[in-house]
Length: 173
Image (cartoon, rainbow, N blue to C red; front, side, top):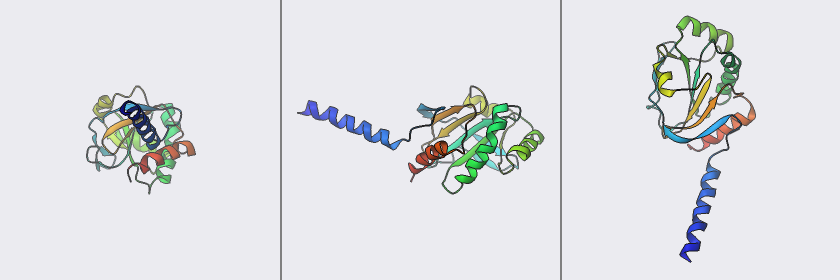
């Protein structure tokens, strides 16, 4: 009897845990969770942001540069996503990779005027995260581990992506 009961309970546990995680849309990879690298940067206005100091919330960590074509196309969608999810608890860390403030300011003014960028002036934070290209997005869970990655631009303001992010946010409440 015990031999039959254990596999049954195990399979029920797997079904329950699978139901708890929303299915990522196409282009978002579900990873084996790992500890997020440290992230301490200031935004373009000098306000500090630190990832280890954000327990209990999902964080959308996005690496971009003004010279990156897909980044240019994606940034307005990210701005709309930020506005749509503003009251739902998603923290957003948009990290510019090794560009100066004038370049970043001009880019954001033209493509996403309501977004504040974190400045990775020397590229060291980007180096620690090791994106395989730009844009690159990581979704860090409330426990400080990276669970998902998206390489390349995504329509973050479309219902499929918004529903996925909302599903993650519900896991924290």
